[in-house]
Structures are given as structure tokens and as C-alpha cells.
Image (cartoon, rainbow, N blue to C red; front, top):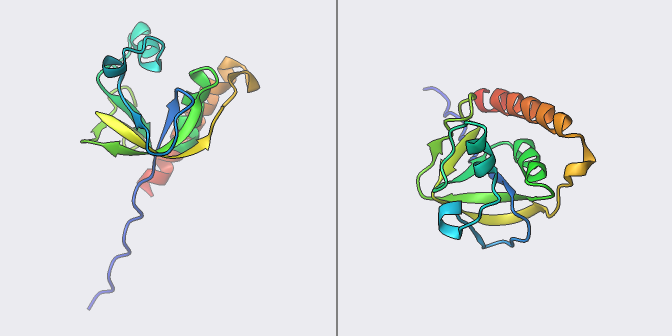
Length: 140
């Protein structure tokens, strides 16, 4: 008789963006809130594939930290996706970034991630490193 396989650890999801949310609050997509200042708008402006009717979450805490900074002093949250998760078409690394109809804040990890703590290029390099690190963790 073979030994039972260990249970996989449930995924934790993070979101970096608008500050000021509290546990229990819903993160809603820009189409619902009417928000114009979003990273989704920035991605679309650069020719990326982002949806204004979705919220973006990641399994990588440090990935979300970069997005919080790129929001310009945004916040880092642990979240629970609401609705079906779909792979983020803009993320070339499977299993790291997802889109969903909404997400609920589980806890505030960092209420303010200061963009000025690093130059913009350094944040982008950190995003590349964090995404690669998370990809290794997901595939392990």
C-alpha cells in the first residue's frame, strides 16, 4: 500500500492597488466602480491585455507589492477571489496571476507601499524577479 500524498497547501492570493480598504471589503473592477486611475488603464494604454470588468490577483506576495507601489503608494492585501479565476493573459508565467469578477480583502498586509522607495526601473526589475521566484514556487 502506498503512502498517501500530502495535501497541497491552499493557495493564498494577493492584490496590490488602491489604499484604504479593510478586511471584509470587496475589491471591484473599474467598470463597476467607475475608477479611471487604475493599473488596468495603464496596461491598456501600453497595448496590454487587461479587462476593466475584472480584478487581478496573484499568488505572489512580492508581485502584488510591486503593483501596490506602481499604483503610486497603494496598499498590499491578502484577498480571497470571488467568482471563477481565469489565467491573466498578460502574465507569461502560468500559475502566478489571475483575473476574477471581484475579491474580498482578508487582511491588510501593508497599508502603504511607497513608490518613491525605489526608482521606477527598480520596481520593474523587482517585478521580474518576484514573478520568476513565484513561478518556481508554483511549479515545485
